[in-house]
Image (cartoon, rainbow, N blue to C red):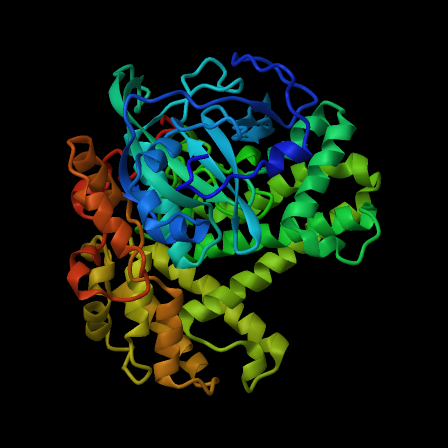
Length: 541
């Protein structure tokens, strides 16, 4: 390895079995967790964005980041003999149907860096063909790569578990893509996102060996996950047994519930919650046709491939999380050989999710937890649950911008006369997409809810300033709005990356109102309502 660059370790490949066939052709691969494969060399190695803070944490110096060696590393052109790059083997359910072997069709892992005494994997997405490409080219286009880079970093700064983006680079290549699936294919520029995570293992990493009856690989993969990503589960254990497996599964369920609650908090819709896109460590992974809620709509999905069924719609993400966990439970059943403990953990998922959702919503509304209030815990829980659920109904009555509404709610003084419809209309005016729908019937319902909300605020000892602080720390001022990233993509495709860099900087402080970025505190403009890239996306990338 070049002396400027920190050393990469081969942790994953040293602990799990490899595909003995090193020929890079599409095929079924059994009894192996990965295949050794080198990235496809690129014409150029042009870095558009570099996450300097993350790079520094990984051990890269300023001199390293400006070196040719670094640029070639993160585009796959600097693969030294000591680097054992590999593509992972996994399967998955796609849109509810078992798809069999899938694997890293365009992602290649270079190895592990040491970050805060824990290993993290460096992966190149869009680095070329692998044995799992299924006759595809393994490349990623610029538009999807921009979306991945910006969204993963936006999620990180929002405080939501996610893979991280280290760099976004142009490769100098072009590939043909039919992004609308309408027969109008065209050449698009290629790019590579270098991304980092403690683990890229997915639910499908466990499902595939189990589906094939490969209990040896199943056990090895589960135990690799436990040792490397959940070491606290075996600190005092003499060996990994059934109880450890169950604790591991329970921890995955808890992390999944927490992750989806966090998505709901900020209005994020993953778009493709297939089991191969679900992380075992509870991170957001694989930013494909994702989207952010502009107007609050529990039935909205950003994925054109899901437009009819809406399987992965905003309001169904918690259910899909449990459905996917059920598939994971089926996969590890051979290690447990008992259904009841797995079912009990799955049943507990619902309770954990509901508790965490209510806690999250209380923070969004700036109301204290039940233990801090004057009423009894159970009664207040029912009252708060009703208050939160009824607010979702109110937000759904007219097209209301979710992000702007909660920031406006924080500015509403508890002593304001909310029975004055003119006051309400004026205060929340910028949240409404069609002001003609905001009639007296709607305002009466909003007023009734706000009266209940004001009454609830009186049950807490929380000061007004602390309430506003809590709400603004929970409800972002800035999200990666779909139309804003589409504008950045269109500029980038013409060679102007200034908007990409601007958004990357803006989204580092999503909860803090920034005067110089005031133009980004707006709801979706009319022109973006039905525009591709702003309202919906395909899986083409």
